[in-house]
Image 1 (cartoon, rainbow over the protein chains, first blue to last red):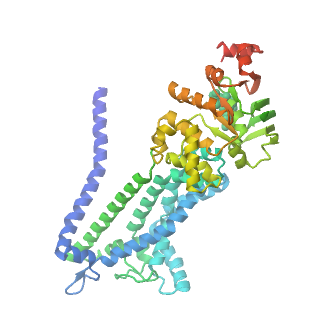
Image 2: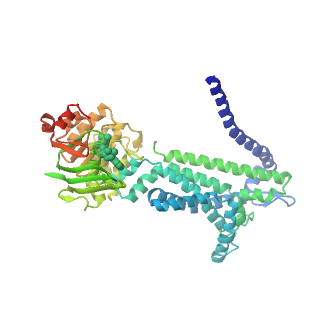
Image 3: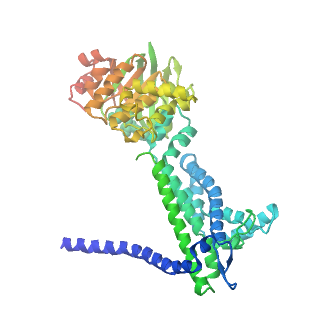
Length: 287
Length: 248
Ligand SMILES: Nc1ncnc2c1ncn2[C@@H]1O[C@H](COP(=O)(O)OP(=O)(O)OP(=O)(O)O)[C@@H](O)[C@H]1O
Ligand SMILES: [Mg+2]
């Protein structure tokens, strides 16, 4: 009897696990089955390195290089802004913040994670874009605006994951450091934080993933011009926004090329994950 | 000469009194052992000597602890901990290379020169009797070592800042007999240069290595004196019961 129950439960767990595996597999199959033929038709290098995106011209050109550059710029900008702020906030929360302040700051950060991206987009549109237009010039719809906005959007992820990584560092390390006459600052920055490196890197991967995949907020502030920008005050189009802007009316090879853009995005995410797991293995000392 | 003096010390964790009117002299270049049943306040007492109790919220201390005749409350806490080093019960090397572990303390106190750090690392590892085992593995993570090696790394790390007093809270309780023997031998040689306080649950260990023994019970010192006298002619009935194993 119990044997049968156990077998049944095994099957249930197995099926549950299977659901997510099937989902991943289906997404891959869909992406590659539609994207690869389109890429082949356009020409792989013309597609990746082509500087011109003009799908409605005749003859059309399908070069997504500007969008790849756009995604990289905007994500890099978000990381430059979000990582220092996020990691320092995490250190503050885990090692400096008085309990009273923590009870206010922590829920505020969690709330930040729950705000829908369209609301972030509005904030960018109403605050960041005019700010940049007024003080730095240009239209305000720019790489810089998108970077700042994404930098804010990835904060909750970076703070949350980094903070728990720092809290998970054994207390013995901290005690060992202060017992050697280290100040609180030195014990935190030279012992505890380095011991949390792999968790902090993990938070950065998640942040990169979030930033490179974000669409709605970016489309509202980035200007969306499909060309390689020459300044961070110029507008830019990312891979995600390229898809969302044109999918509504695209058909034929145009539609295929948008799905192929999704393939490239997917490959990017895979590469980032790979890169960080290598980094993580290299910096993680034991444990 | 008494290196450290504890005078009329009371310690409270919140409402709970963990140490009750402790008076104790810790003579220089000798090994003082704290013994007593679990929960009697040995760790609390040893942590008071380098103010590690400052980290515990709600810990209140009355009375005085003197280092070379000066109150430790008046010293800068980081200076105090540089002079009074500590080795913990559970080996706690940092997740760094062996070299960086040993160099941590000197770097903390401003030593930057590579040559000087190299010297300190070598000397400390030699003093901790682990140089020969590890001299080819200085760049390897300290976490990959055995428990006994890790504990000797921690001793070397403490020695690297050249403390005057070395506190050891059950340094061998997590180790096998061979590692324990190595550390006991090491401690006995270290007393030439350092004043050592060691907490131990192992009566034989106290007999083997210590010069002074203090017996704690419920936060009080029941009896203390030279180890030879303490174990051969105990003055207090409770001491006798404890050391003959009729107790606790
Ligand atoms: N941080 C703390 N907060 C509250 N009470 C504590 C704290 N640390 C220790 N105590 C209490 O103080 C008393 C003495 O503890 P201590 O750790 O000094 O004992 P010990 O003699 O070292 O015991 P053991 O041999 O088990 O290590 C115990 O009753 C313990 O429960
Ligand atoms: Mg103890």
